[in-house]
Length: 603
Image 1 (cartoon, one colour):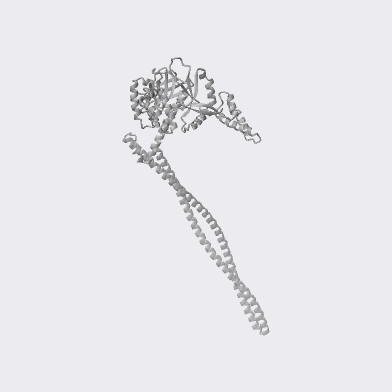
Image 2: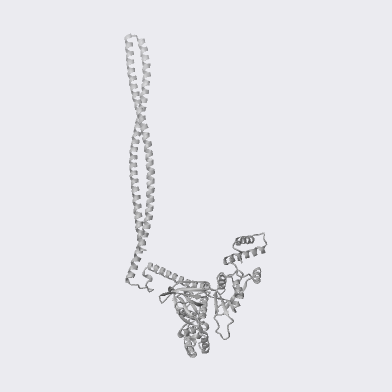
């Protein structure tokens, strides 16, 4: 019994901390661990409806399980272990493991109420089977068996394990335990008169039940066959002809089943019941509240299966009417009633019935509706897959024939859809290629922009350098001209001075003076010659520098011209790349829009 939700967090935290606290004694930690597990389970299922008994508390403290008996419809039983927190759903899983039933999703536990205080000579009342809530505790169920309202009214209750409903998917399950339990339940409903059949079907089903029960061991025992006719044919049908006729008919049919195994007989019995309009139903006793057409008795039995809702008169057992699922427009329930809004003879009527099992009736109906919808969806999906694979699978299965125009239209639509899908794939590939090309173009454009910027920078630098070198050339040219002029002037002065000195010496006639003058003149001439040579060397050096600078200026002018041409080429390439990028983007957007519109129209 979990604490109030306001305290469940605090209590669970405390129990969890104690279970992991190594300072606590081992026994305390073990008890806390068990309490932690029980708290988690009970917090999910909710509070107990009854207080735990002394026996339950002692079982918890002693770490032992309690036991109870679960019955099957053939009066066999299994022992079930449970504790104070075991729910009905957990009990179903545990019982399925015990009997080795793998496909137990459609099975659950019921409360079977048996009337024991019937009046003397009165017709025995049928057992009531009440579906147990999956989240109900087994301990609460057993306490209510002893102290509940049903017990006070003189009813005996026991736990019953059976199918909550027959579903269409059951036909594909071949598990022996599953087939046997389904057969037992179908046989139980049949012998209770819930499946009205004609005499021929009754004889065949009687022989199948004998084969399923005894195999071929009664082939030579006509008395044994005769006694089993009373057992496997309903009283209402049995009274329709003499016993000897039944015996002769059933014996002949039983001998014809000699090659059948017990399993084959059970499967054939299930197939016959399944073929009935109300076959594989689950049944609910109800009382009429509202009947707009005035044809239903005060008490009746509702049968729910994959085909719809079926109405039966309980005494005598008689089939009255069926409403297909497609004719049921609406349904709902309360704690005491259930209603159906359904079409009868093309007119909508609302029928209302008194029952405490309204929720179970609605759940069964909704489950069958969901199964039909899922089956239709799966069938449509399979047909679409088969159409996509081509005509390979069309030969083996018959196809619906809606006429040549319909087939041609479907074929045309299918072809258009395939072409549209193919074009969509091609456009997706083309889009990916164009995106890659666009990325490459953008990369080339960025490289071209960087190269152009570098060329512009180099061009500006070389232009500045050429201007500086031209200024240097002009300066050197001016200096060279000055040096040449100075050299010419020195040479002229030298020649004039030598001539003047020689003339003066000759006129004087003095040889000694002439020699002195000549020596002085030679010294002056030597000094001027040295100055002249220096000037000439400077001029020669300036000429060399001028020639080198002139050559470099010409190279710079040539490089500058090439860079201007390359700049122009890069600018032209950038313009072309920009135009191509814009054009491809527009074309891609247009193609994608066209393709999208085409696919939408086809779909």
